[in-house]
Length: 114
Length: 112
Image (tube, rainbow over all chains, first blue to last red; front, side):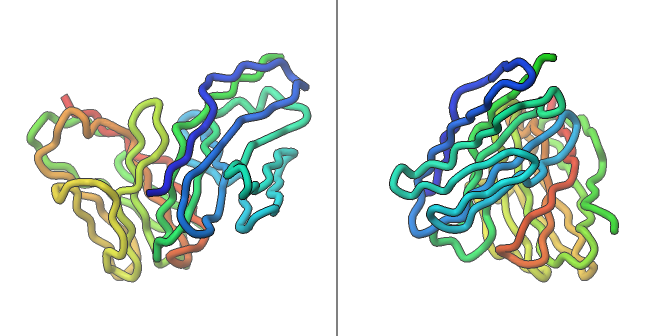
């Protein structure tokens, strides 16, 4: 079946540092890939997505590239801010299912200090 | 435009009891998906409803059941509650089965 593996967390950075959160996946077929963010006390928000190999998703300074050869979708940001502190989830959809089931990784807690 | 809302926000039950969680989908959305998020884990797919029919289910026992109403709002029912059912339950709506899912803030269920 489908699965998503994220780097072990938590991640603690100083403001303006470079961020990488690793994500790899296992899926049949051609899944779509997503990064969601969850702020304290809130639901999940879609951060970015990519629907086919070599696509780059980007939003709010975050980027991730769909790498089929390495089955990866790593999240990056060049300069993090305190307001980026949240839990980040990598997810996939598709890979043979006929409905929109999302399969999530375990999440990575990001804390950014001033 | 109103987003996805869920009620109640928090709930405490004891083992063996039954619970009903509610979700109002975003305007114009006809699909609702439910997820269980245990503490420190990613959400796990429970099931999806499309136009009032269940059209996909994750690895959850039959005591997890649901409904979708003509206005596309939805309920999640859990019978014979177990301690491991303690989690954040998330509802997400979308304008189709494979379209972007918009999540509500969740219902925190504690089973004692």
